[in-house]
Image (cartoon, rainbow, N blue to C red; front, side):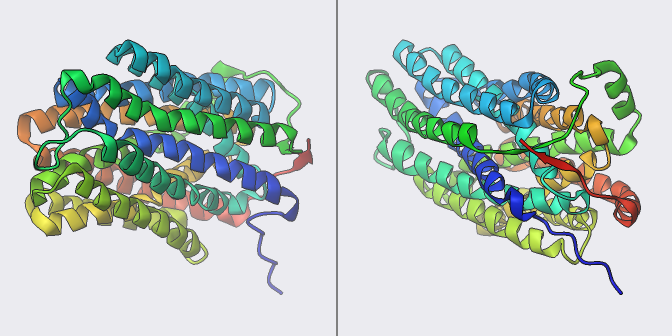
Amino acid sequence: MSEPKERVLPSGARWPFVLLASCFLWWAIANNLTDPLVKVFQQTFVMSTFMASLIQFAFYGGYFCLALPGAMIARKFTYKTGVLLGLGAYALGCFLLYPAKMAEEFSLFCLAYFVLAGGLSILETNANPYVLALGSEKTATRRLNFAQSFNPIGAVIGIMLCRSLVMARLPKDGQGNLSIGPEQISDSLHTVVFPYLVIAIILGVVWLLILLAKMPYAAEHDKHLHFFSTTGRLLRNRNYVFSVFAQFCYVGTQITVWTYTNYYIPEQLGVTQEVALVYHTMALVLFGCMRWVFTGLMTFFRGSTLLVAAALLGFLSILCVVFVGGMPGVIALVCVSGFMSLMFPTIFGLGCSDLGEDTKLAASGQIMAIVGGAIITPIQGFLVDQWGVSLSYLLPGLCFVIIALYGLSSRSREATFHAGTTGVQLDAG
């Protein structure tokens, strides 16, 4: 007689899961509201593509710097505490954009985005492993993919907010391209900041709902991080180390693909930024739909197998972007988002599986890998300045190759793990 299938989401964890899944939506809004603004800051402060991309450096640098403190909070207190602190810092960063707007200082915008992203880092460091811990480890990767399926919904909301509340209201020339003169800087920056202030207010409501909810937590009696011994074990775990590097490459690829979409499409099709955002929105919708598709496919295929397939298809699409161009190149660039949708939660789940109490610090390493967005995006910005937009996409193409290699390396390990793992014990709290 066959064993009953493990439930992806135990009945007692449904409301906590809904609250946590909403966090995935909210941090996606911030990420995707910010990506197209590199072009806006470049116009507003009159700087090179590389300099404007320092907004992304500050944003994803905040992710890197606050991930480890996020893990310490989870170890010392609870995942719930970390989620609340992360949401609070996220809201604070949104509010700090207002004084940056008043001062009209690019450096203050970078600081505000650093604080905002630091909150997101703490939030992700706690929310991702929290979702993994809401049930059996056998279904952990599927459960995280399910939660991450709400992330693309936030991504679409973020890009639509950017399109309707920001880009549509900024001054343009006769051809519909951004044209921000010195006398228009104040009004333009107000347009940029307003959506973040609205988001900050909504985050306050979400914060209260989580505070008042009774959330499960992974039972753990040792509140010390044991940083050096845990780090030593993780560094000796080849699968984990490779997963962090693959995550670094993936996040850098995602951010740089979406950031320079707003450069590539106008160049290839001769359209305005607003029209380019329509294609960007289509890419994010595809990203969201494909995440649900991939989550369903995990019922039949291992996550590592799907990761290899998605990475190879992403690489082939990038070749079309670089060497074909025109409408086929734009379609291929949109398709890249569909193939990327699987990658973050799958790499996270494969890298953090079967780590026991080391999972909290391991999760911070995965979130610190988000610094790939801070490093790879400016590098591609430099390549845009030097080689042009099309050839610059060879960089994310290389990243897809590395991700495919990680998927191949984790296949045999995943098969062994699924054969003998047991569930995670949860206590109500």
